[in-house]
Image 1 (cartoon, helix red, strand yellow):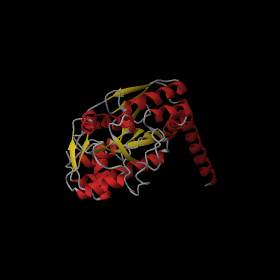
Image 2 (cartoon, rainbow, N blue to C red):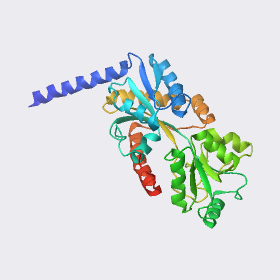
Image 3 (cartoon, rainbow, N blue to C red):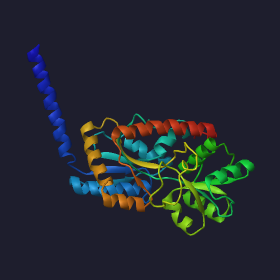
Image 4 (cartoon, helix red, strand yellow):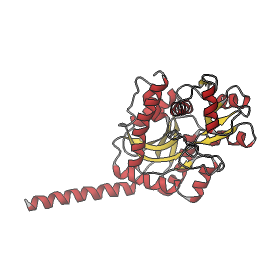
Length: 322
């Protein structure tokens, strides 16, 4: 028995050494990074910025493959169905955890079909009003909305988008009754707020900061646990006594389920190293991102929790699955 145990221990040790060696030699060829949107958006920017640093360190190219369409489902399906060998990865965003509540049927399981690597970055959302709205802070907006039920309007980039659902969550938590006005994209949604077509909206600092600084929109509060370094004068909703509006958009690195843990750990080591590099952190903050770089276990938990949360919000808001 002791001899058999010794042999088995040796086998397992050799197997572990082989996996370690495989991870250390990874990658030996080009790595494809699928982005679920067209070039130019947050996912694309992050994939290219961090991927370029990973390419320099590991000696192989991390090449972005843009697979847009279907509210991010086309690219997400391509990630899920790829061979789990570390040579196809994906940079996903909040659509991964929103879509299960929006679509009656998806060609992948948002929780089971992916191996989480790291949450790259998130972005707070700013609660905004048009300057003509007679409020100076979030509490005054809530009081105004309650005094005029069903009269105030808010814009979004479309029904079921992250901005729309964030506002539905805000409505649910604060108990206000405001009317959603969907537009065909983020640009028209912002333009509607600036023109006074709608009273309020949520949006990212990267999109709205120049308009706030120019006085074309009034920032009342910001989501997230801490004030955003790029706009430190804007208080958080928590500071205003409004808790639970946890709706920050995020971007993360994933691989197909079944990718060897040693490769996941190697990817995590390299990508988080460069996300946390001081110069990279400054660049990301200047662009409107909040660097995160958490562990695979933490990111996997984030995905599970977000799927459940947005499913509840979608159901309560009466957004119909497509």
